[in-house]
Length: 201
Figure 1 (spheres, one colour):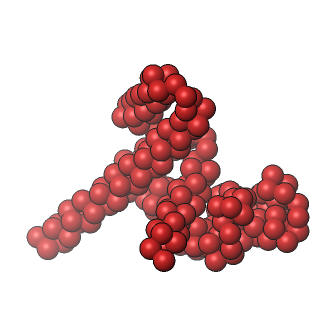
Figure 2 (spheres, rainbow, N blue to C red):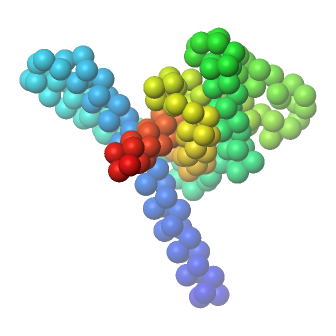
Figure 3 (spheres, rainbow, N blue to C red):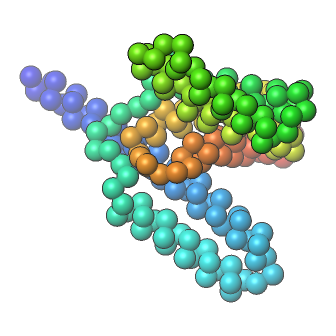
C-alpha cells in the first residue's frame, strides 16, 4: 500500500515536471520567434525593439500564467498518432521539392487529404486524431530548402515535432497556432544541432 502510494506520488511529480518543461519549451520558442521578428523589423532602432520585445514577452507570460488553457490531469498524445507527424512532413516536403507545387499548395494538399481520413470509418476515434498530426507535420515539410536541405533533416524535425506534440496534449488547449509552434520547435531544434555540427566540422 505504501509502495503504491510512493510510486503514484513519484509518477505525479514526473508528469508535472514533464508538463512544466513542455510549457516552458513552447513559451521559449514563442519568445525567441517573437524576438527574432522584432529584431528583423526594427534592427536600426534599439529603443523601439527593446520596448516591443518587452511588451510581447510580458503579454505572453501573463497569458501563460493567468489564462486557463492547461488541463490539470497529465495526459499525453498516443504514440500511434504522433508517428503521423513525420509522415505528414515527408509528404509535404516531397510535394514541394519534387512536385514543384510550392510550400503553400503542398501543405494545403497534405492537410486537405488528411482531413478526409475519418470518412473511411466515422466511428474510429483513432482516425479522427490523425489529421491534426499530419497537418502539424506538413508545417515541418514546408520549410525552405535553405532551412531543411535534405529529406533526412525533415524526418528528424518531424520526429522531434511528434515528441513535442506527444508531450503537449494537455497544455495550451484552445490556443490557435499550437500545431505550427510545435512544428517550428522541431525544426528549430534540428536546425540548431545541424548548425553546431557544421560549425564543429
